[in-house]
Length: 396
Picture 1 (cartoon, rainbow, N blue to C red):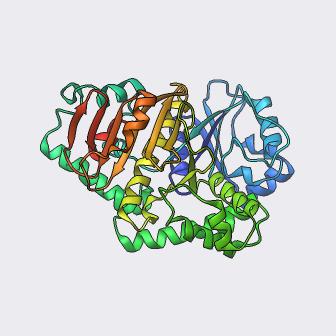
Picture 2: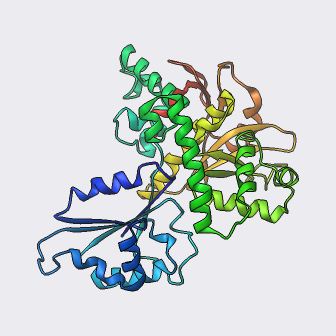
Picture 3: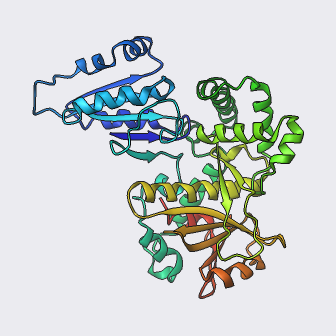
């Protein structure tokens, strides 16, 4: 089985429907269908009656969308899989984290592979195949003349930056990105947030204070890029520390936001607890600097998830900050070792010196990423300044 999880409206259903074209027989069933819901609750084995199982030469695909909303879904799915695993391929999609969703008493461990689908990224929209970690590293840290992308014409570079600008303004979600209209973006975002809070959150939890969760979401947009203080949010919302933490956990499981931890290994006097939060829809940020940092964070997280999901190794995203308030926006680790650090500067392409203390400890390359076209400067053997158009084209 393959589990495909990711933010609501990022394209999971479309992806699964495209997969149907590669099979002789395929069926798509969603929890929103009343007839399927009744069958799943009473006689789940009947959903495979669609297939001609007596024909051994047929390839078959069963797509089950949002079944994690059902109680004991893992146990029922395990029963279907164990009986029919040699006859049917199964894809399960959902906008909650299928690997940690707690409704279900039986484990599916060893029976599925998990894949995480993200909104569009720059390299994806230019129709290039995802870069491997080795290709990414070579293109970032060897001379630009060696890069396969250095031969782009001025028109190609200009086109790539225009795609980046559209991503910046309209997010990476298909509907608002493809429409490229602010009013469509606003309507889409309002509808998506309402569904996450009033439908998905209700299905995941027993939260009754929906109005306060809506206030929490409005507060988060102004706190992107800074260590997130639970105490400050608790005071604003007038609820307990545990309640705010629990709500944030729910929003993370529903792919509304993600949080990254401070990296503490080999860093003296570092922060160890306060995490930074970013939104999958970076266009919610009102300030350009925060929006740009959020866009970079989403691209880096997408690369980490993709490389992990296809077995390239262990990749994690952190940030750096010590008690002297020196900070670097991102640290990417490969197999638990520092790979490179990155600092986001929206319009400032002069090198910010805050990274030096961390670089002397971590001994890894540092990149300052700026929102400008055709910027690529090597400062020394471990330090670069790059435009976001070139930087993001090296990932997935």
